[in-house]
Length: 473
Image (tube, rainbow, N blue to C red; front, side, top):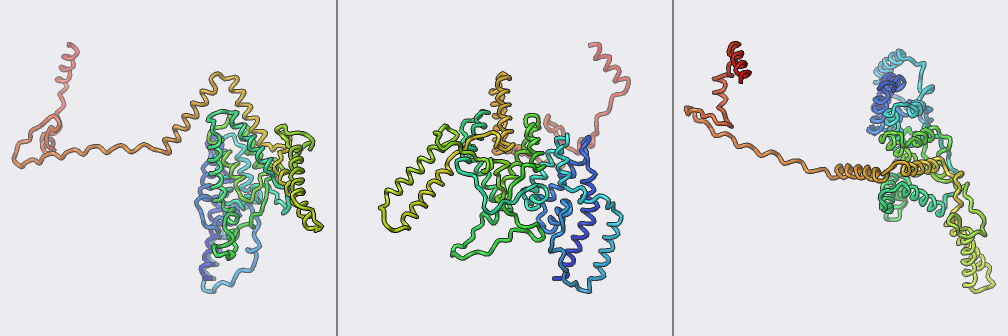
C-alpha cells in the first residue's frame, strides 16, 4: 500500500514538472491570437483535458498550478515513512525531475501570470474565435470544477447565515418583466410552453451540478435512519462551497456583460457561448443571484402604504387585507382570561401580515436593477427600432425562425438512410471450350480482353488523314 502511494506521488510530481511546467504552461503563456495564432488550439486543448479527465488528484494538480492556488494545509503535514527498498529509485527519479526543472525558465510562473489573467485577456481579444473558445473553457470550469472558480476566477462574497431573501412578489414581478421583454420581440405566442421547457432544462442542470449533491440527496433513508454525511469535496480540493454571491465589480462578469452589450454585432457562436456562461454562473445551488442577476432585497421600496394598487405596488391592499385577516382571527375566537390564546392570535396575525408582505410587489425602479436587466431592456428597445426602420422586418425575422426550427427538426429526426443498391446477378459460368459471345453489356471475358490487348493507336498519317476528312465534312 505504501509503495503504491509513493509511486502515485512520484508520478504526480513528474507530471507537474514535465507536462505542466515545461509543456502546458509555456504553451498558454506563448500563445497568440494574431493572424490565426495558437490561442484557440491551446485553450481548446486545456478545455478537453478538464472535461474528459476524472482523476481528482490530476485535476487538483492542474488547477492548483495554473490558477496559482496556495498549497493546502494537508500537503504541509509530514508524509508517512516510505519503505527503504524504493528510496534509491525515488531519489533517481527526483534527480531526473530536478535536472529537467533546472533547464526551464522559472522567471515567469503562474504566481505572476496565471490562467485567470489569460482568460480575462482573451475575452478582450478582437478574434471572435478566441473569445468563443475562452467562454467554453470558462463554462467547463464552472460546470465541472466550480469550487476552484469561486476563489480564483470569480470575486464572490459569502452570504451571512441570516440574510434578507427575495420575496414572492418581487420574483413574480421580475418574471413578468422578462416575459414582457420576450413578447416585445415577437415570435411564437405560446410562452407558457417555452417557460416550462426552460424550467425543466434548468432543473436538470441544477440537479446535475457537482455542488448540488448535498442539496438534492436525501438526508434520511426509507427506514427513517439518518444517512451518513456526503463528502462535499474531492481529496486535495479547496474547501467546501458555501452559500455565496457574485460581486458587482467581478471582472469576469463585466467582461461577459460587455460581450452581451454587442449582441447584434457578435457571431452566433459568441452569443451562444455568452448565454451559456451566464447560465453556468447562476446554476450552482449555493449561488445567490440577488444583486447581479436579480434585484437585491435591500433595494426593495414598497412606497406609501396608503396608496392603492396601481400595478407596481400593492401596499394599501396588503395592509388592509392583513388587518381584516387579523380582525377575523380575533373575532372568531371567544375572549378568555387565558393569556396564551391572545398570544397565539397575535402570532397568527403577524404571520398573515408577513405572508401578505411577501406577496407584495415593490416599486419598479430602473436604478435599482442590475446591469444585465437594463442591458436586456436596451437590446429589446433596439429590436423595436429595427422594426420601425427596416421594412418587412417581422417577416424576415419569422423566416429566420422557421429556418432554425427546420434545421432543429432535421437534426432531431434525421431522414432514413437510402436503401442499398440492388445486388447485380452474377454472370453465367462460361464453359471451358465454348466461344465467348460479346454483348453490349458484356463485351467479353477478362481473358479475352487480356489476350486481345488494347486497341492500337492510329499512325500519324492515318490520324492526320482522318482529321482532314472530318474537317472537310
